[in-house]
Image 1 (tube, rainbow, N blue to C red):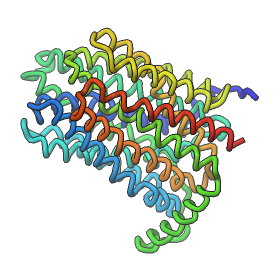
Image 2 (cartoon, rainbow, N blue to C red; image 1 turned 60 degrees about the horizontal axis):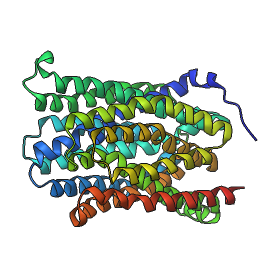
Image 3 (cartoon, rainbow, N blue to C red; image 1 turned 45 degrees about the vertical axis):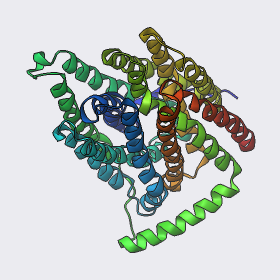
Image 4 (cartoon, one colour; image 1 turned 180 degrees about the vertical axis):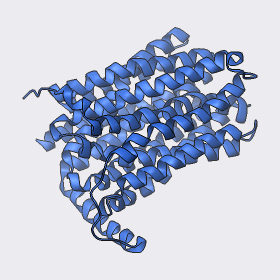
Length: 420
């Protein structure tokens, strides 16, 4: 049965405040994680052996994901039990903000310090997403999850794209901004990400309210209660087969999605494409992704989230195979357009469909498992691609992701069947 989408929901303050956080933290995902950090790391902090640099970058991404994976369910349970979603979000936001700024002061060749700052900033980004994702259930009516989730991702694409475009301009024309060279511009961009992330997080953190906690908890008691809740939730996940099968599917296909996000620029560099062309491709992803995320949010609201995710995964399979054999920069641009169309769709519709499956009063806890699943996949994905690059070369390393998209799609269809 088709459902209509009420776009007036997107004008409500809680929804706007919530979406502004995606506008804020996407500056890190775009400028640092997907854009300048892989380039700067390979050419400035870890110059030399390209395969070794790819391995180090994969190791840094995996280390951050592993930390979040291990703590996500516990943090989510603690946040739900003590009504501390916004407090935890604030803490991890500032970890990401300060660590992003720290990259500005890392000197050339100091790849260990660069990795350390990047890992801390990534932890701030990914751990914060546990609580941001769970707030979807608080700010949106249940029948509008797909639309609101897509709106959040679209704001992220737009916000991340706007700042990234400014940073690219700085890099291409450093003299216009009074900077000595492109390296100085890139270092300054890390500082600008920090400011952008911090400033635009304010509406959500201080404009959305949580219930007042009537009972106070000591830290030890809160941790004990959280562990008890975790055990209960784990048992429930095993019993509710739709949730369990979906998490297995998500674990597989989001591995591929996150690996493409984190490693695409490094992959392009390994193929010998110019840095300026790779930056242009990232901008294409951002500005194609802005309307596409809203469209797929509407599509999911109208026809079903699972159908939208499967369309996206089908395109990812085709793009991954295509990427292994491309040798022209123009082909990288075509790939960027295709990824921009479906990247936000797969992420946002996965979030909204999972949100519809879980109890609202324990959203952070369930989303802790959801994010743990995604981070567990992210531990394996970049490391797998990095190791494959060392063994058979960078060009064919991306083909290792195809099996993840196919297996994830099969399990996703199974999850839909079980949910019915």
